[in-house]
Amino acid sequence: MVLELLEPRLPVGTLIVADNTESPDLRPYLDRVRNPDNGYTSVNFPGKGTDTMELSCRV
Image (tube, rainbow, N blue to C red; front, side, top):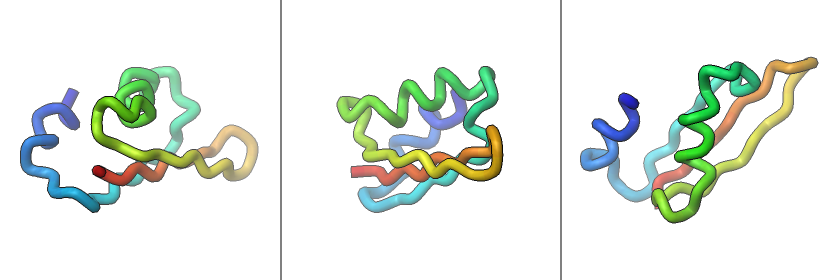
């Protein structure tokens, strides 16, 4: 996963926005950023229908 390659360079406070988070392909990404043990705090923003976004902050 690209995020894992970037994490060593992401300072605290980095914001990451993911779009179309209802896609099954994004499940591994969401599992990573939603697990506080991985160093993120995340919030899901529902949109129209199944169009959602995830906002994650590196902590």
